[in-house]
Amino acid sequence: MALIESDQSSLVSAFGLLIALVAVVGTRFLGWEWGSGRLVPTLIGVTVAGVAVVIVAGRLLD
Image (cartoon, rainbow, N blue to C red; front, side, top):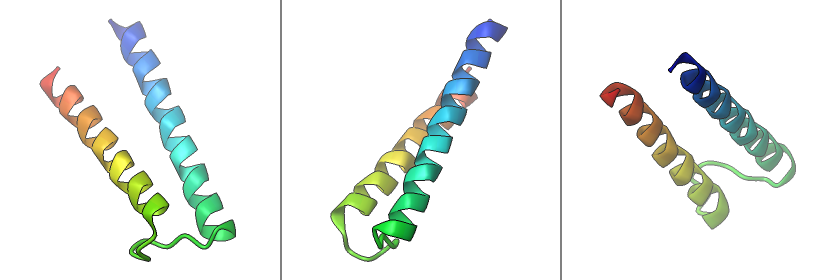
């Protein structure tokens, strides 16, 4: 069971790192800002928030 949790933890960490990279690149080079009314940053934010809720709910239910 610990191996599965370790794999999930690594996957969640990699996902978080990818999202952070997208946020930095989007902010620095693409002019993305939260609340700017642009569709792509809003969709990314909503998707990431949804994934976070699913991960936390899954861990709480285990």
